Every structure is written in structure tokens, then in C-alpha cells.
Image 1 (cartoon, rainbow, N blue to C red):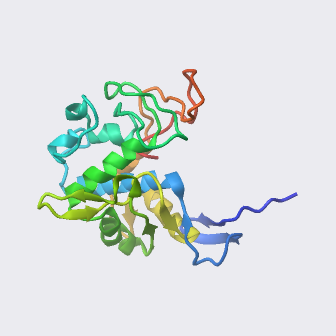
Image 2 (image 1 turned 180 degrees about the vertical axis):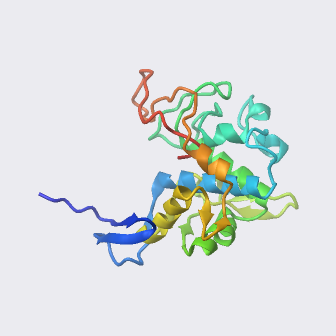
Length: 240
């Protein structure tokens, strides 16, 4: 018995569309991709490195975003630690993910949304504009894709920019909405090591590292799990 999910899907080969399933509506319909959106936020981090807005992924967040405040270790948390869930910050706004509590950054990877909320806030400050606008100009317009992205209502939708103006913050942890075809274009961009039609959209080394296993042990992602165990693939990279 075949069970059809209420979503659309595509199959591509060598950059060509070879199959499509429209179980959720027309091919033009956008679907919320939930935590796949973390990979999209990671893509914005790659752009900040490409454009020289950050010197290194290992730089301290507070050196670029002065309002960054996540407990006693805030001054020693890096962008790498946010994008790999190893920042040591506690879960503060959700109950469906396991809360490891506060710890020193860099020791363990605990998958939860606070890392990504703070990364999106910091990157929004660094770019001085919403991440949706950044990606539309630098990536989506190049690969011929469209995306909707909800604002982060959990933090009130805004951060204060360097000039004191409020900037809209997209939810770094979820709520990017795509057609199956356009999300497949993002996958193809990464399969091509960040290149598209001869243009290097993302740094090749950043894309390669996005798929490189992190050394920290991965904790459980569910709130009812107390045992120390690897709850998902050990190949987690920079948000992928």
C-alpha cells in the first residue's frame, strides 16, 4: 500500500528534473521546510564570510554583534559554535527539544533552536538587513529560486541595528517556505560546491566544511531523553 504525504517532491539527475510528485498541490505551491531552514541560515553565514563581513567563522560573535548576550560565556562564543550547536547556551523558548542547560562553549553539540535564533540575530546585525533580502540578492536571484521566510515572533521580530534602527529578523531555526523545485536548486548549488553557471556563489571551502563531521559528541534532541547517546547522524556539519 502506498501512502502519499501531503507535500510535493522532485527528483533531479545531473541538474535536470526527471521526476515530480504533486501530493500537496500545484508545483508552484510553497511548503514550510521547518528545520531545513537551519541550513538556509548557514548559507547566510557563508555569504558573510564570502563578502568579508566576518574575518573567520571562529571569530567571537560579540565582536561583531555587541548586543549578543547568552549567559556567562557570551564573550567566548564563536560563529562556528552557533552553527554547529556547540555554543553551550541553554534552550529558553521551546519545550519540544531537550534542554542541556548552560555549559562552556565547544564541549558538546546539543541540537536546539536557541543557537539558530542567536545566529540569525547576529547575522542580521552584521548585514544590516533581513536575511531574506540578503539571500534573495546574493543566492536566490542567481539560481532562479524564490523563498518566503517568516519573521521570528519569539523574539519580537526585530533587532536594533548599528544605526539604532530596527531590522526585521527572520526565524533562523525554521519557517523558510519553498516549492520542491526551488529547494532542489539549493541542493544542486551545494552539490556543485557553491558554484552556479560558472559563478562561485558560496565559498567552496565553506560548502565542503558544511558536510564535514564535527568532533564534538552529539546529544539527544528530545526532552524526555536523559541518557547520553548519539540521537542522530554523526556527520552533522555547519548546519547540514
